[in-house]
Length: 200
Length: 200
Image 1 (cartoon, helix red, strand yellow):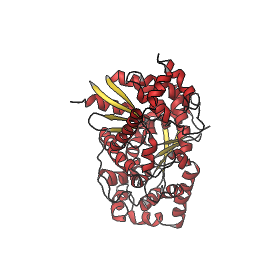
Image 2 (cartoon, one colour; image 1 turned 120 degrees about the horizontal axis):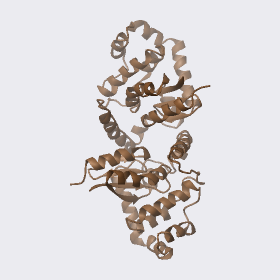
Image 3 (cartoon, chains in turn orange, red; image 1 turned 90 degrees about the vertical axis):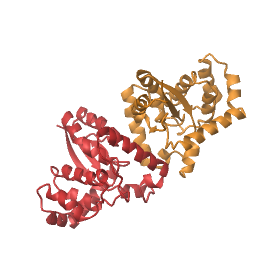
Image 4 (cartoon, one colour; image 1 turned 90 degrees about the horizontal axis):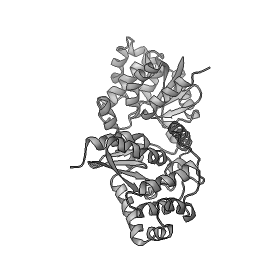
């Protein structure tokens, strides 16, 4: 079966519409997805950025927020700008990684909806606990697993792999043959590529 | 009639596929286009960039060249990477601006084809002269007009207007109601917007 990996960062604005629409697009094409939460911070730091480029370069930032309004408007997705932007996404990423591949997408969409659909902060356990409970899981043990050394190391390793793959930002799709597709705009193209170039 | 302005920079890689396909897309939608050549240099300088971001940030640059290969491949457009990148686009922009609205698009496509389709340098009159002749115009007087003070000032004013409109890069489409659409990826969306929001 054709496969692709979906790299998202919970603080990333364009990861929101991508996360909300990618499952249906992958299903239409028969592409199996694995969601790979990772952290943009270390990738940005290597470029010399200590903040989101959308904050460092206000012309890009102003454009992005208007563009995102139009993108979400066309998808009938609510959009509320989180404050501060970017949000601290470390806990959400650790929790997402501690989940299995089957439950991670639903949790991830809950986080994106809270953050960009409702404008809520995502950095505290009380925000994330009901999303975990909605999966039928007990929040406390999951938070415990999320901050274990092994899970922290796994998130670091996943972020290192993102860097090794050459991801320039988030969201990205990567395919079995090593192609990288960056941005909410490239989801369809990346999935089409994955279908046309299945793993051997 | 619905109208839009197409802002392109001859040194800009993604302006190449946009320039090659925009006329057909605009005609399909009944949108009248005016081509606005401008210079990215002053916009980039204001962000603190003294070179193309694709050179300053090599991870983005490597991604862009691969992405552009795929984009051009899907459009059956030849792609040869010009060396150096970015090219010095000042003369081409001045010549394009000195042309009238009706001849500017054809000249502009010739420049993009030479640069990104054939990998040629675009900074010298001998490269541009045959493109001007192909329009049925005499190259020498046009080069003369291109470097007159009035035309130099017009290019500066056009670039200042690009900055005032908040263009974050090139290519861009702008509409009568003040919307900005950035990137080859946004051409269809920008033209659809222009059609839905004609000037009053």
